[in-house]
Amino acid sequence: MQINIGSAERALRLILGIVLVALPFLVGLSALWTWVSVIAGLVLVVTGVVRFCPIWALLGIRTGGRE
Image (cartoon, rainbow, N blue to C red):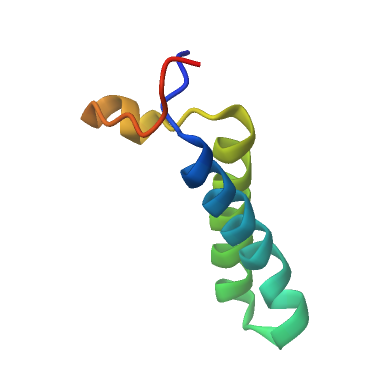
């Protein structure tokens, strides 16, 4: 698994992921939107932490250098 997420994208994914995880608990979304928001947020946080996105790998996209 090679790094394919750069520093700027990593920071954006982590921030957006945390916001999406916290959003349902702060706003009070319906059950469906709570699950959608939390799952999407967790995916963003995990891909930001490991610095690898499988979809980017399939598409051949690299926003990170060879770190």
